[in-house]
Length: 136
Image 1 (tube, rainbow, N blue to C red):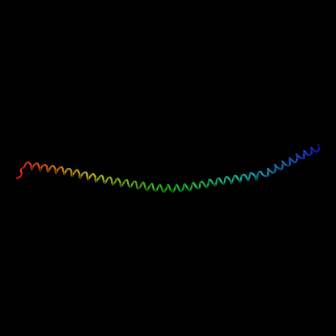
Image 2 (cartoon, rainbow, N blue to C red):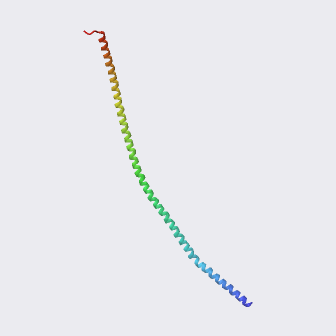
Image 3 (cartoon, rainbow, N blue to C red):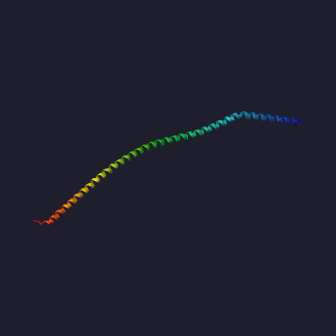
C-alpha cells in the first residue's frame, strides 16, 4: 500500500503540475488571444465602415447629379413660364386687336345698313312721286 500511496501522491502532484501548466499556458495565451480577437473585430468593423463610406460617397455622387439636373430643370421651367407669359400677352393683344377690328366692321355694317335704308327710303319716295306726277 505504501507504493500505492506514493503512486497516488505522484499522480496528484503530476496532475497538479499539469493543471498548473495548463493554467499558466492559458493565462499566457489569454492576452494574445484577446488581442487577436480585437484585431479581427477591428478589421471587420473597418470593412463595414469602408462599405458604408463607399455607399455614402456613391449617394453623394447621385445627389450631386440630381442637384445639377434639378437646376437645369428649374432653368427650363423658368424659360417655359416666361415664354408662356409672353405668349399669353401676345395672344391677349391679338384678341384685343381682333375685337377692335370686329367692332369697326360691325360699326361699318351698321353704317352701311343705315345708308341702304336711307337709299331705299329715298328711292321709294322718288318712285311714289313719279307715280303721282304724270310724265311731261
